[in-house]
View 1: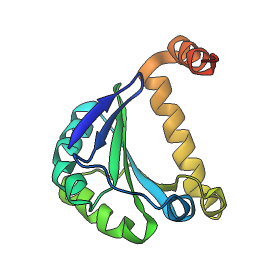
View 2 (view 1 turned 30 degrees about the horizontal axis):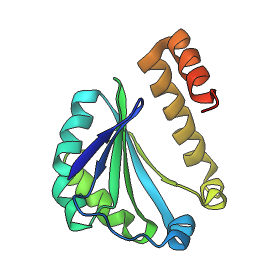
View 3 (view 1 turned 90 degrees about the vertical axis):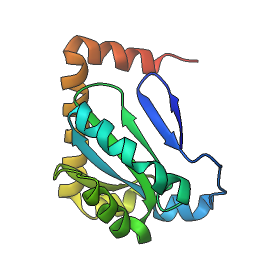
View 4 (view 1 turned 30 degrees about the vertical axis):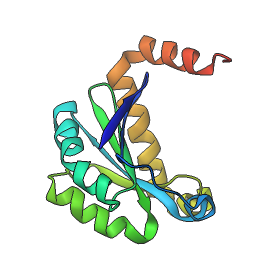
Length: 144
């Protein structure tokens, strides 16, 4: 497994890149999002390497601040297997499944969708504070 870090995320990628069926991913691709303290997220991330390299998990990324979130990507047909892997590695109960692009599927479960977005917003606020969050949003919205 190799890593790539940017301003917000550390990406966990397979050593060998794999072809992805873009159409299938748009319809069925998603992620488990686990919310926890940074030390717990780092522990989970370390354990994902063999699963990412074998292809059992597509990839993952984690938020570079504390508290943190870990996004673990897979197709929806594999999400039960990926959840089993995450639980075997010690993932806690603050987690949610979310589709990447299939917003219609996300909206079919509005309680889960709202939980996901409020948890993301809470994590950002706790990580950066109000002022830092506003600066972060401003930075992200700058034209490049």
